[in-house]
Structures are given as C-alpha cells and as structure tokens.
Length: 143
Image 1 (spheres, rainbow, N blue to C red):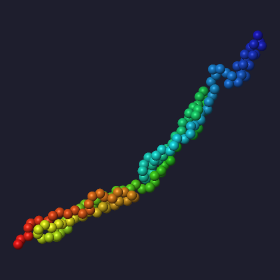
Image 2 (cartoon, rainbow, N blue to C red):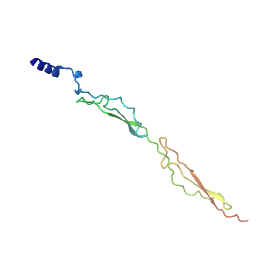
Image 3 (spheres, rainbow, N blue to C red):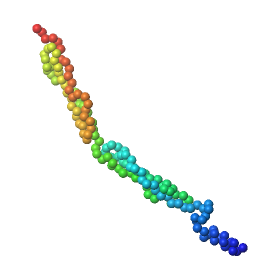
Image 4 (cartoon, rainbow, N blue to C red):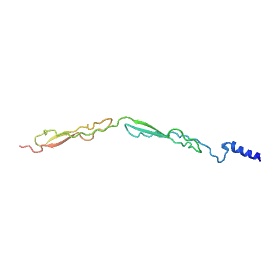
C-alpha cells in the first residue's frame, strides 16, 4: 500500500508537464510583426504616422506573461513643409477715366490684383480676370 501511495505522489509531483493530460501550460505572449506605417494624418505642417502590432503570436495563456512594450508607435512631423496658401483677389480699383472716346462708344477699365492674400508655398493662383471693362459714352457723335 505504501508503495502505491509513493508511486501516486511521484506521478503528481515529478511527472513532466508535457505528460499531463488536462494540465494548463503557461504560455507567454509574443508580438506580431509591426503593421505598415499609416499615411500621414495631414498634407502639410506636421501630422503623424502610426503603426501597430498585437500580442497574439501567441496570445498569453494560463497565467503566461503579457507582451512587454507598446502596441502602437507614433511618429510626429511626417509632413513638415508649410501648407500652400491660395491667392485671393483684392477689391476692384476705381474705373479708369476718362473714357477712351468722347462719343460713339468707348471703354473704361478697372483692375484688381491677386494679392489678398498673396499665393505662397505652392498655393493656387487666383482664377478669373484681373481686368474688367465696360462701355462708356455710348451716345452717337453729333454731325
């Protein structure tokens, strides 16, 4: 009887874990490979990119250790160049006088400039015309 008890104690205490059916084996977590970097969050003046990994290669089990370190990396300043500023029109000037003709239909002009604001850092030019005209002194000339 003592021999049977000692054999039972030996099996419980000294048997290798791999030979244990139904025993939980501790598994420490390990990281997956890093994902690709994301696109920059903005097109100019800063922004950030990120990448991530997961603690599933394998995941921790049966009181195994969690992965150490961060699951996400962030890098700031991925697009440091200045943002372009599109040009904007100034207000129209006064009409330039005098009319090009005193009678029979002439033309007067006015203009504006693309400097409100000035185009910078690859911004777009103003669209439209910088000069405007209209008819003046449209009455027939006498005699």
